[in-house]
Image (cartoon, rainbow, N blue to C red):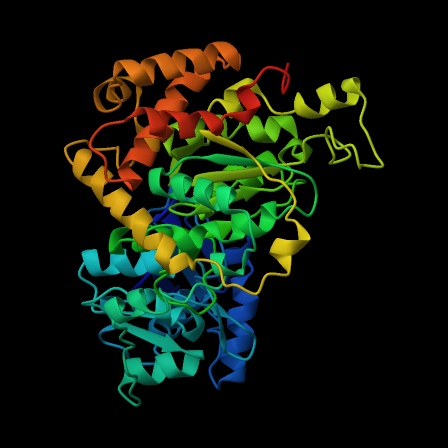
Length: 511
């Protein structure tokens, strides 16, 4: 008997429906075709044991299974449940009339219980698009799939529950989630809050400007000055994600299998990879391309602690995604594109010992060591970082002060107001939403300077030996400072503040 059941394959952040055709005929053998990988080929052993332990049997006949479209590579163990139901229906061990109205996915244990899968959210979106009635999947993944309305999503713990439901012997309640309630939950209670940070008022101001304009930022300072502490609190002052951004981010984390029983992600991601990371782990890839850290940080923050410790070639592969805000991974037979619109926050010590020009420091670095250390960061990468700020250690008086600092929620209100000004400014433009994304043409249009500001900028560039690349960056940052002040034009005070945030361009730093 020939039976068709349906599963799904995920490529990039999109899913493709897979038709699993099971034919049982006279003879002996188990033939699985349609470009399955080793994990799918091994499924026959898991299926046989699970069936036996649940009172069913593997048919002692010729079983032919085709996974269509047959020229598309299938991977992973998530097809175990699909194949099991197909074999049971085709061998007439169960009667399931409506089996073709459901997408069925799940990895089997030998006792018939189900293990979580990857990409449940893109699969659910595709199932709804193609008019399927429901989606069976492991209970651990049910919250992410239930975000999709108009589709019955059933979280099951073992294969017997699916069999009983399809035969009409048992009932399952579809999981429903109030997406809006889930989305707005805990927004005003960030895990890391700026009120915990003592002193560092100028750095907090810098972080506020970076968040308001979406600017990349690098923090330079000795060990223990608070660089990591400040960076971890940056997501708490970024504007809340829109529903569309939340869905995009959740899809990527679903594909990577990193959701861990949560529904819609409402907090902006914060990724902090170790400096031993490889190119592929950072930008994504592999024989079956998976999203890398830059895609996992989409709509959030990517924090690179101790930037010069990262391998230079790893940092260089970030240049194009920083510019294009997406990363394309090409293989011989297919190409996958993952979004990667993130804020880069980097930190570094000013020298290998960590103490640069510090008279109280017991360690000093030679000019040669300094040059070698700083040369690991290329000019083109620094070119994509708008704000450079020096972080100094907090004096004891500030550390011991009991006064509570300004909270992240209060700072976020100002940031959100500035972002709304930018959204209105760029609403006619497709790929520009905030100041950091402006190109030269937009800078000329929206950052026009009066004579006083021009003279100030000219004097600063000559006196501080600022490079040509600093010019556009200063104007972008000045525009964001003006937006925080709700000022229609950029004035000299905005330019003066923006000039302070270009430490690494000054003669002597990377010279």
